Image (tube, rainbow, N blue to C red; front, side):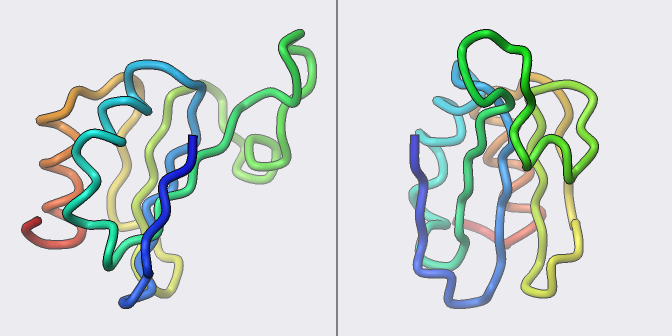
Length: 101
């Protein structure tokens, strides 16, 4: 799953998560922000055995998934969602971090 944007403002929404409903929810609602926000998805394991965490999980020290981090153009985390989120919650956090769609 890949979400990309033009990143005109340097803002980044970093979703570190397994596949599933949260990635689907973010994919569905992210369209209006894609021209100004870069969306990055990372799996949590390197393969299907679930034995080796990816570099993103190791470097961020993540303890669970799904996680959604939203940062500004300097890399400062401006919002975060832990665990499952629906489409309304995704829209709300994107709006809070980056303004209206």
